Image (cartoon, rainbow, N blue to C red; front, side, top):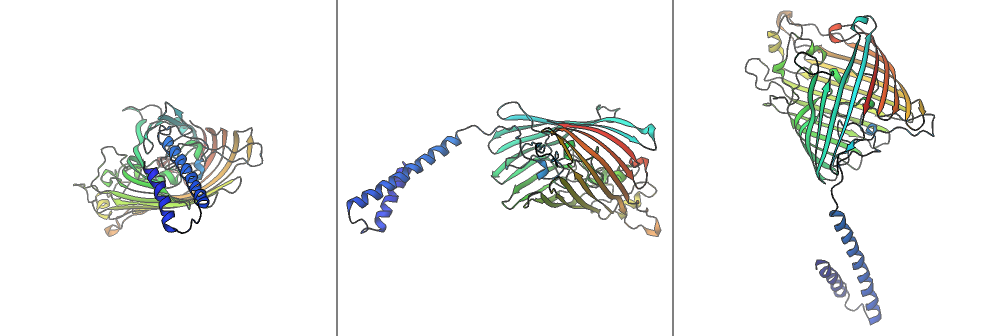
Length: 467
């Protein structure tokens, strides 16, 4: 009925605008027929749109053909010198806004029209060159994730992770929820998430599957300074623009400085890794905020960065930590010209107002650092390919980082000396049996050795998979 009224209004408007224009009936009839044809075409478009709206929501199964390499960390390689062998691409699930789901594995397995699951895992062999007795083999992690579509705009994502094969009170393994959140699209290019989410800093934290980085282990900078995989609970908004910017801002929980253990090595291994809460009965008096973005306006180039900040005392009643604030910032770039994959990252963190706290920790081996930082440069060459899937990518990485670059000044010279800056060379190769199974080999050369911090020259082998 409304469409008929619309057509009649159009006819009346045309007649009213030019009452003297139709000098003869033939011309009037011709124009009326033209208007009828246009109205019929409009009716057809309306019927088509109505038919599309009655279709069921898009299945939640992850889709193929979109590369994680376009968003952050290394994806399966692009073959160089083998035009008959197309580059393996990393199939990924997508969000309601069409972006890759943070932390998902491969193409996934559908359990029905609206539910799918995916997974990934990693097995490692580490042999220190100077301490053969410390050689270990480990099922480092196994992860299962799921994705369920409630309607065309709303989904839930989750991941469960098992580390080190066995989790019990007497073993070193863990079972944990890595992420669990509901996502709702407010428009085709932006939406909101609520729950436990990966913090969008660095190149690896959101895309950390074994096939997405070079070397058996994740780089040290994105473990020691950015504590991958770092997640917090809260509310976030995300989106993308037509000119290539993907953005993410959020507010939620943060680390708890009151949980710092000055007697343990964990704070020297990773200051934030030792106090982030993972939404396990998280102290939440002091919210933290973050903002991050990645620009991909030029094919093959990614430029991004982010910042995370908030007070981290969390209302502790026994320690002088409530005025302490964390600021962690980072910037990164990745360029993939032809068969090459070049990347660099720098990150720096500070914790303020730690002088009184460290005064209580005098004599302990691990006071709270005032500043910590790290950076790396990395180059890989997608050198060889066999068939349609297999390929070999040698790489070289140089890292510098310091988990305790400075401490707050203490009276009478009672403070602790900063740690020396560690430097690590890593050389190796990833062999992709196919885009979802990768064998790895590398050798790591350290500037100095520290057994307590797992610093020491070593030879590594690894296997990673995803589905």
